[in-house]
Picture (tube, rainbow, N blue to C red):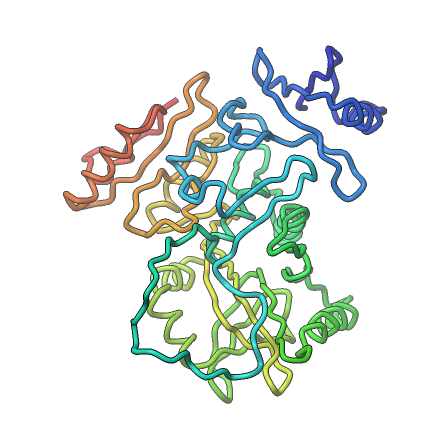
Length: 397
């Protein structure tokens, strides 16, 4: 249980007057110290939805102990570092995190003529601000929810109910363009035949809220577990677990793009029964009233719902869980597949968290050079899981 120090008094969430003390400390503008480290790590108190909560100071995650809930994986091991404060901005006064997305949550129902001028012609050069892509939004929420962290005590305790619960908590207090993100994200509740009618009623009620409003067509974000992608009467459809009566339709362009850009993920999903495939997609109601995909991305997770990128990554991650290790998976966010990041950070090595990288069989010289550069620029201890080795590598302890 995390302990906090407020003006010399020790406090934990189990204390009966926990929230009263936070309210008083907030009124007196006192800063709590997280006592995961001997000297304490400064935190702050925010009032969120009429509740006082202790939050990590921006850019201070690396100052906490690796076993602390407030610890954040170093920026060199995550694509989050490349986004900086431009795409993810936390307001300490309100506790609200403002996100900049590179996709729209509304569509214009009226087709407008293209601007005049020759193709490619421009008289202005603009910088490209950092924004969260569809995939990186899923990575951010998974990261915020702590679902990329693993401790041995978590074994057997993760299922869709848990994943949904923590993702919903992560969505709270997030805004985009001053609108609550929770208004635009739908995560299906765990389906039950006993409650089929009431669940379908809630799904249909949500879909009805996406009907066109004047010139604007609302767009929603769906996060769910993929069951299958099948042919439909016209185009194709995405079948999502826990939404058995509500397929999400897609045109041929989206369908072809999925198999062009996500063939590795789909192949592993089809080959390995223990693998789950999560989708995040934007969708809207078509003229016929059916949900239609506008954009889509995917993320593979293993049997413990930990993010994985390949069969090698899955094998290494399962090795770590079998050995009852504690670790944090790196999340790629906007980074390209050719960029090198660690598979995970081992956090159970006393005083020396260790980044674990994968060097695949017959790795190219270019990959080896990138790996060497990343390791040399990091202050963390590192270990390379070299699959070209004659002996099976062993994780450091």
